[in-house]
Length: 91
Image (tube, rainbow, N blue to C red; front, side, top):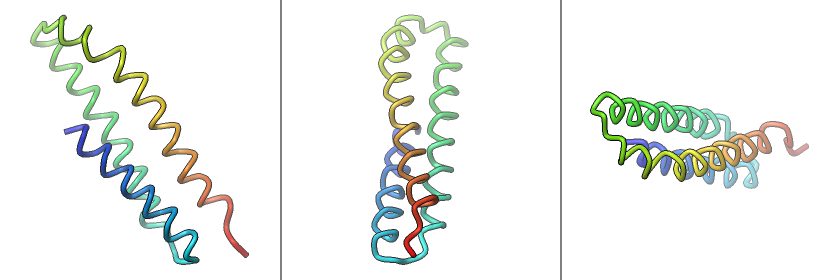
């Protein structure tokens, strides 16, 4: 589930940039992108919690180190991209 939320966040961040450069209102895309980013993080931690409950330690050791780094990078990228369109308004 977190994969779909993450892909959606990337798509809406790109739509946000596209509309920003076309001088259109991009606030809806910005909101959707940040909301999907938050849902991605929540879904990932829910998945990790389910693995702990099921005592799937091998799955945790396989997924958590790599994906937590990737999620950190992508979350920071979403903040920078959406923040860019928020604070760099064209005049």
